[in-house]
Amino acid sequence: MRNATLLLLGLLLAASAARADDAPFGSRDQIVPYGTVSLVYSGSTAANSNGTTTLDISPGVLSFVSPNLAFGGQLSISYQSQAGVSLVTVGAAPVVGYNLWMGEKFSLFPQLTLVFGYASLSEQFASASSFVWKPAIAIPVLFHPVRHFFIGLGPSASVSVYSNGDLNTTFVLGITSVLGGYF
Image 1 (cartoon, rainbow, N blue to C red):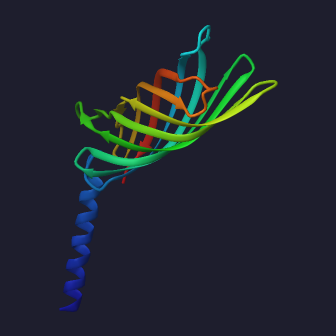
Image 2: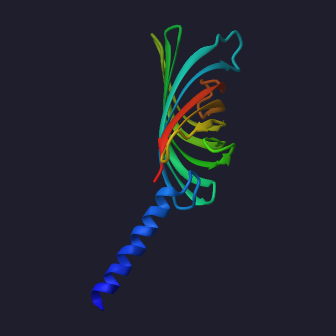
Image 3: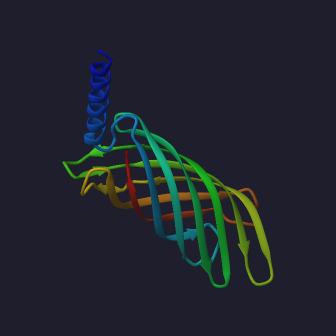
């Protein structure tokens, strides 16, 4: 009797694991490690400001709390350089996203983040630092070539607001790529 109970319990666990493996992206209780890389063009509210190119790298993790609705967090590392001036920003952000299927292999995954961080500006003869908060939106189209893996690309926008009045508010509009998996 004990062996039959153990066998039944083992079969139930195996069936549960198999069902979880077949669950599509966005299913409840999925954990999603991912990373984004953004290459963006940004302008500033300062007069006579030239545009600058920014590289942003953000690893994160999400959890689907209900079908297609995910909450999580990410780290954000950003580097900007223009005419001998560099700005490095490091922060962390809560993330919320919602998955919208567009067929069998594609989905739209809009995400909102609010980065809280620290920025350091360096130029030849001066420097400044500031706390920063950066609300952002990204709307990547995800391609799911196989189960448990996705890659995506889409538009993104953010506004960086600094606590130090010496640093200007910046608006960033660009393209974000994302790569991740889920289990």
